[in-house]
Structures are given as structure tokens and as C-alpha cells.
Image 1: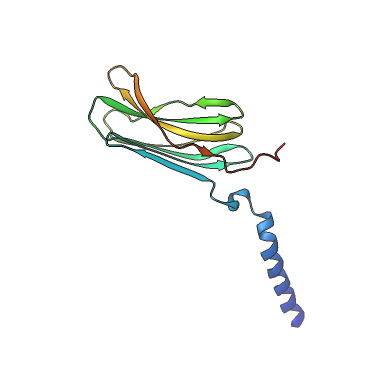
Image 2: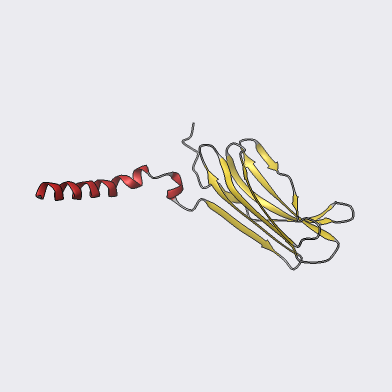
Length: 148
């Protein structure tokens, strides 16, 4: 009986020591970036999880809200910098007749060093961008200095 108890205690101690060593990178810390921009005229929010193997942002949750009836539509777009250079991704706009819209997506674009998003006011009659407001820049939480 003493042998069995000792074996169980040893296994529990080993599990306690080895679990942090074999845990996935996701267990290492908060790998989710979440920011919002809010004014009287609009609201925009993006949240994404940084992934590795393969490099991607997945999932990405995008929310845009038009708060004013001022002749402008609201658009939101992601901007990234990394392996493929600096890139501004396609604008998503709140559909006509709605004040709030939400999208869920992902992005495979190689190593992404940093990302932010823009919420833009778009003139409804012409489609021209009148102004954009940038979120803060969010840095990739993975250290790639030892990656090959």
C-alpha cells in the first residue's frame, strides 16, 4: 500500500512540474487584443486572438455602429504590418438600414508584427472617406527573435 501511495504522490508532483513546460503558447499569457473607439457619431471595436503555427489572427470580431443620422456611413478596416509589409485591409461598412453590424472572420497573412484598426466616416452620397480615427497599435505578443 505504501508503494501505491508513493507512486501516486510522485506522479502528481511530476505533473505539477511538467505541465508548465509542455503548455501551449496560449497558456503563456493574454494573447487577445481588444480595442474600441467611441464618439457621438460612431462606435467601432475589434478583438482578435494572436495565433502561431500557422501565423494568423483568429478569430477576429469586428463591430461597427452608426450613431448619427448625418449623411455619413460608418466603415471599419484592419491595418497590419509584418512579413508582407504594411497592409490596409478591405473596408467593412454598416449595411444601409442598420445602425449596428458585427462580423466574425480570421486573417492568414504570415508573421504579423503589429495591427490596429480604423473607424471611418464615409459620405453616403459619394462613397468618399471623410475622416478616419485610428485605434492604438497592438503589438504581437509572441517573441519571434528565435524563430527560423
